[in-house]
Image (cartoon, rainbow, N blue to C red; front, top):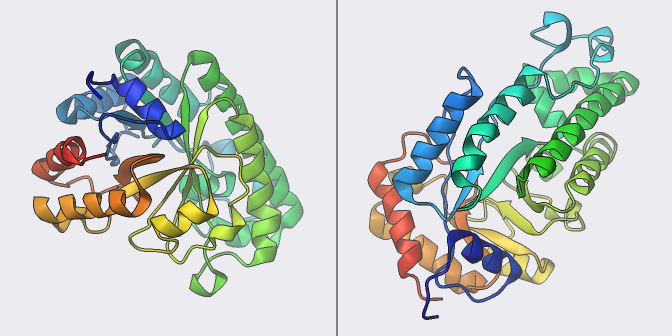
Length: 315
């Protein structure tokens, strides 16, 4: 390939399985931005992107879903029943949309922006703690009302993202883990997680949908028929391998960087991981990135090395 591709051309070609001048790469980490207004969070994202010249930008969504009536926890059936759908003026959505209002004019013509969202149950866990699961599973009727409220809110938000031109969704799925390893039993998964995942992903049709299957000891068969264009998971720390996933799905694969080890690696070790992933998965329908967020104190030289290695790998 004689002419270098633009970042958006490179990313789109990689997703589609077409030839690329080099495999696109990005690394993401939490920017501790929940305490900041959206415009300041946008400034952090822009500075991080510019510092490393990433090929795509996963936008972190660290604002928490609001709980009703000033609650800090959901401890009872009655408190679950208080949850209602929230609109775009809810503080979490308002601040994230202000982030995009600042970020899109700067970057929309240059690089793919990918929004991060969590499944409805995990959205509640992030809002008030993992103990909410016990309340939810003990009160199924109230739980479905609460999950419905979160799902409707997320669907409304996704529709607004599409209207504004945000083209990608990184959708984090929790609970698709083997029950023996602490994942949800099949009955819990089928009732409280799977139906809501499908609604979110269907609402995001038209976006690039990247399903991030979170955790180790995955029960990947639970999600293989989801309507997505790409998969992300911690393939260095959990089955399936990249090669195994190639046989299970024709979608694009994200991987190549071990998020558990990266912060402790040498540049050479990181480069070997990335090169081996390309050999295993093949250079088509592959995007380089970590299996989950890397630690926020990951060294500058390692992040720069990831970017340089991607440019040098033969594809």
